[in-house]
Length: 348
Image 1: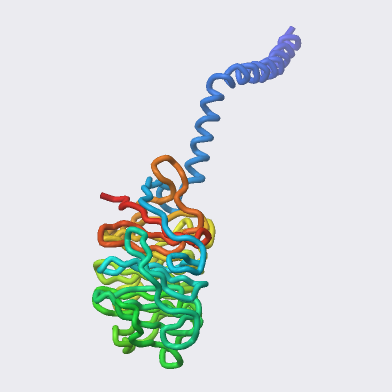
Image 2 (image 1 turned 180 degrees about the horizontal axis):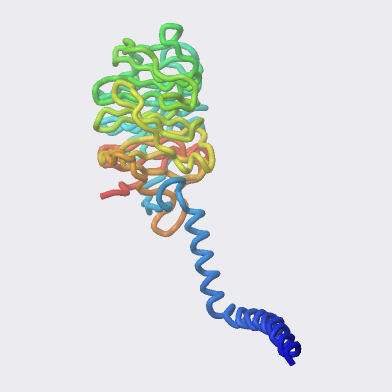
């Protein structure tokens, strides 16, 4: 009897395990319609959050923007463009556009009306070979990064040639952008050598060129965009390192801002701008977006991304140049469409 009793528990345990296993499976199938759907929904939500997650930052926050006007068209006539790049807005209300393939600078009123052109193709004074970036000073003088002539040219507000900085004296290889701060310091982004040069408005050099190729803070893989904030800091778009370098007014490295859009798709020529709030705008041509950061925040907090209008329609096709006027209206050059998009201020 003891042996029979000993066998029964063993058998019952095996049967019990199998039965329990079967019951669990059955229960699992029954629960699939209830809790299973909830689990799937949670997984989907988490997946969306992971996809939208910024590397080491917050989820992407899309900022709805309103387009005021889009102007310009493809061509060679006045008011038309062929590959618009850098932009600048003067204090007297003129938008300047570096018209790369037409080898000139186009002028527009801020309502989109054409106001003429500056320059033409060539190597002489007042002529250009791939003008890529433009800037204006407080006296409404125009500065043009004349890339393949290896120089910066200065014009007065009437479009008359004033002076040039270039040649061996300047040490440029391919100056693709130029910017002037409120203190009359002209900054040149020499893309070919990955360095920043500084001059006064009379063309006299200030200090030594800054930067060299590398990944360390203060080094660049390339330099394109240039902008300044109210604290005199200099921001440099560095697509090779997928970041915006933050430099002090005397070009000492302070920090860097990783631009997620640039990491997702390397931008063509990453232009940047700063508005009256000291918000930094980084154009991401590869993802058709503009990424915004608060430079007053010690960690340069991500504010949001401009991509669509209030109806969810994409604003951009191939954005590149950017400029912001005194009212914080935003101007974007559309390279493929050969137009300029004007957007209302996105922060009130």
